[in-house]
Image (tube, rainbow, N blue to C red):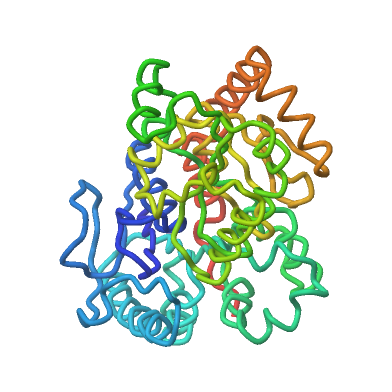
Length: 402
C-alpha cells in the first residue's frame, strides 16, 4: 500500500512557521516512515524549502505565489486554487503509473475539492481517499455556523461527503457531520493529533534558569500563551483572568507569542495593559518558529494558558504538556483534551487552580508528571500514525462514494 500525504500549499514542509496542518503532515509522515510504511509527501514547490530527509514530490506553481501569504486575502485564495489544480494533474500522472492501491490523505478543502472535480469515479477506483478536517469553524454550535459553512465551506462539505473516510479532531465536528450533513458515522473517525517528544521536552532546571536570564525573565512567574494574535485565540481573556495576580505581584508575567492576524486586536491588548498599569508585565515575543526556539519559551514558563474560543485541535496544548508545563484550559471549549489539562469553569475557579496547582510547587510537579505520562502513553506521533494506518488498511479497496 502506498500512502500519499498531501501538503496544503500554504507554506512548504517542513513548516517554516507555526502552520499547524503542515506540522501534522510532516510529523505524521515521519512516524509512518518509522513504522516502515511506503509514504511520500506531495507539496508545493519552494526554492527556500528547509532541508530535510522527507520523501517530497514537489508540485509546480509560479514563484510569485510560492511565498506564504499570512493575510489570507485574494492572492492567498488564488494561490490555493492554482496549487490545487497543479496538484491534481501531478497526482493523476503519479496514479496512472502505480500498480498498487494508493491512499490519498488530504488535509485541505481546496486540494481535495479540485481533485474530485477533475477526476472521474473510474479513475479513482484504485485509490482510497481520506480527509482530515482541521478547520476550527466546525467546533462552534450549528445555529452559529450553518450559514457560514454553506457559503464559505461548501468545498469542505463536498469533500467530507465524497471521501471514503473522514478523520475529525473533536466531538462537535463529528456531531455536525452526522446530524446535519448526514454522513455515515461508520465513515467518520475521531483521532487526535500528536506531538514530537524529541522536539518538545522539559529541560534541566539549570538550562531553564539560563534561558530565563537570556530572555530577561529571571525571578519571574511566567504564564505563556502561543497562538495567532486575534479574537479567536482570545489573549484578552487570558489577561483578564490573570489580572488579579498581575496587579498584586510584580513578579507575574504574561508572555505571548504568535503572528499578528488582527492589528486592531493587538492594539486592544496594549490598551488593556496601559489602562491597568501592567505594561511591564506583558511581553510579546513575536512569531516563533516551531521547534527548538518555541520549546525554549515553553521551558521558561511556569504554566501554559489556553483560553481559545474555537479550535479544530490545538497542537500547542500537546507541545506545552510535552515540554513539562501544566496547561490551563477553558472547560467549555469542547475539545477532546488530554487528561493532564487543568480545566477552569470561570474566573474564580481559574484563580483557585493557579493558587493550588501552579504556585504550590509540589502540586505543580505532580501535574507536570501527569501531563508527561499522558503524552508518552497516548499522544506520541508514532501512536497516532499507527491508528491512522490501522484504519487505512481496513477496507483499503473501497472506492469513493459518488
